[in-house]
Length: 369
Ligand SMILES: [Zn+2]
Ligand SMILES: [Zn+2]
Image 1 (cartoon, rainbow, N blue to C red):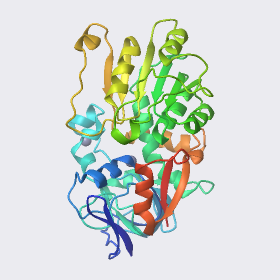
Image 2: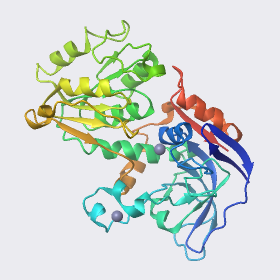
Image 3: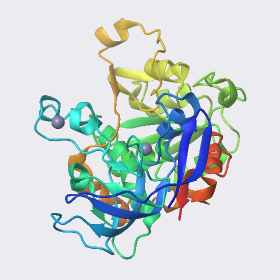
């Protein structure tokens, strides 16, 4: 089979590999779609894990072989996969910190080499301990929709960490695919969402996804240098309804401040500015700060005296799987407008490059076979 092998920093090669062998408790799945995820991009660009590996963990496809002891699946089933599944029994799982569970940290899907997801290949072996994460895709839904279950799950899990009441005002900073899903899921839970981004095209979609207000933030240097756009920078004329973001927040919350902010851009300055815009007892959720080793200058009194919560969320929550499948497959959260680009397997490197350097038109990028 063909597979895209990570051979070193920014080095992805199409290679010929043996089709993975499966054990009695495993499945073999022919991959149809695999989403390009920022966490894989980071591994490819920064070389945070040793090569060789085959990445791609937002995978959907068709079962082509079923291990002798597997029940409930048959060849021909169209399925979405989860590469991590918690044990549900350990100390971490009992605290619902599933992403910290030792079993969860094992990757259960591989196309060869050290298991790393394997979705950028023609076939993957789905190991027995992640079979509880295999979800059947209804006939009316596409494989690409199935491949979105994992990222949608990570967003719903994070939304559940917020203590929002009906009508609360939440800011979602950054309207990439993840930010847009936050906007939609927060709106569905009854929060009023302020969506910010650099790009007017994304803000238009944020409106469709249920944002009550959108505002463009300006920062030409943002993407290239990693420097942050000031959160209260001047709004884009065509999108902004009123002056600066802080003025808008003051007005919308009658001076209280935001109930919650979700940071979907890896910018410390945006996160700190957002912390300043929270009401006392409000919540700041970090979702894009996945790079280790950065310091963060925070006034601890904002946490101690103002009782602002600083939260994080990472990866998926197994117990939300059914709910996520319902949201996506019923299209209450319609992921189709997010799926802007498809690349064939042989062009995975180009897919990753586009995801790493998004254009005004690009959102979620799929590798499809
Ligand atoms: Zn992912
Ligand atoms: Zn566990």
